[in-house]
Length: 217
View 1 (cartoon, rainbow, N blue to C red):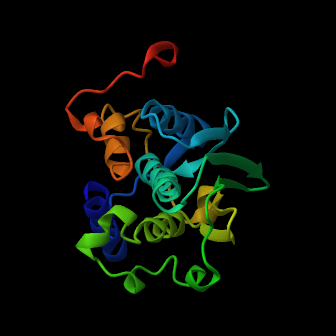
View 2 (cartoon, rainbow, N blue to C red; view 1 turned 180 degrees about the horizontal axis):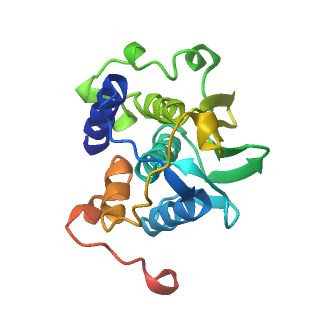
């Protein structure tokens, strides 16, 4: 419910142009590493694997990029039935960066691919909230477009799916102007918790971060 409300509000803000947008020179590798490390501490069953480099940077809004990545991870955890492994990768190319998130779950039926990004095709049925609201990929595409990027969805029915987000490195190509870096937010853990709220254990919402068990105990 927390993620649904957050995503619905964000979609409306993105559509109206009222969402705060402060692109800066962002180390996307470092941001991805922090999100993945926090997600791993939640003890998800699927294994999270990363190939993200150490210093892949671009012009982007850190808060929005964090939301984008959390929605991609959450979609795998909620919708990819049978998923045991999630791969996150960053590839730096000529003038751009490609962020890919893949899973080895059930894949997406061919008939659903054309509406995967269309929130107007998904009804808000309160009885089906456990399966997601259909807003995750809409949010991902809106954020990518705000940064001058695009999103490609690939499905392998029965063996998984991949979402690839292509982003410009040059702010002039993306149509954005850089702001002064804001540094790491002290609310980062909380924002990740909200972004993954439909697929993390309920005990993490008790007000204090739960420490992962030592030595697997």
